[in-house]
Length: 374
Image 1 (tube, rainbow, N blue to C red):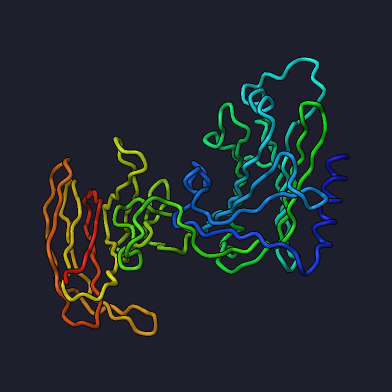
Image 2 (cartoon, rainbow, N blue to C red):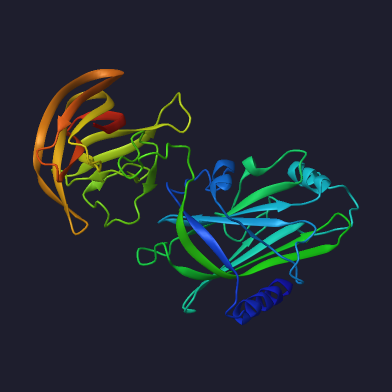
């Protein structure tokens, strides 16, 4: 009953905030929220602003809580960095609570209420960051956020999109309320909260890839991908167990069923490559140069066709003009090999796309780039 009373009062406060409510911005992540967690240290540092939970008097509490949020098509993720007593943190990590201690029950709880602005739906997420059972099984404690011997730890609340008709899109606004209840070693209870508007904002750079010329050529290292939002996306493609799509690249309709899958290199951390078994995928080079160089790595067994597709851009829409040239490469090796060459536009007003194609083969591709030659 105590939990229900707390939730009722919390939702009442949520409904009473006025027009001058504070705003928290969730930044779009330039790659998918992965099962390893959205708010690792590098991501946290890259997000420009953070919210803070305040006490009832509007002040920073003795043990502050910082909040940041990222989103993509599949997930909205809240990261919380929660300060606490150093002794309490060490005890909780090692699960060694001294006998006869003054406090009882969870030492730290976080409740998050997310609702639509029109009031059509409301979701409640209850988190117990003390490594106890949570009411939502996908709540995640991120061990990389724990500073041993320090004074804070981090937790994540990952919220999935509500089906195909409710993706997370830039510019959307929600009502959000976050409340933390922390009990000190002496048994004193400290409460802090945030209530206001959540705005899905612009891009936050959240990876270590080069930022130069990102609009001209994206994701040549093949390391940025996202999960297929729904089955209507590239419906004639089998994307393997992960169901991942390569960001910056496009899949063409294949003869029969296309087969495209993302794998991690065995000897390299956070480094991925693509396996193409049937069909073709491409990326448009958006530079203005007339002549371009290209390079990529490949291995496998079968026939790889490297084509350059001609596009025109009109009213922000791409129109296929035809194929500029085609290079046929027989492959029968388990060793990566680098291929390169040059290509030239037929018209200065068109764009060229690097396209990889194969039929009933198993071709592995990585490190694919096009660069302008001045």
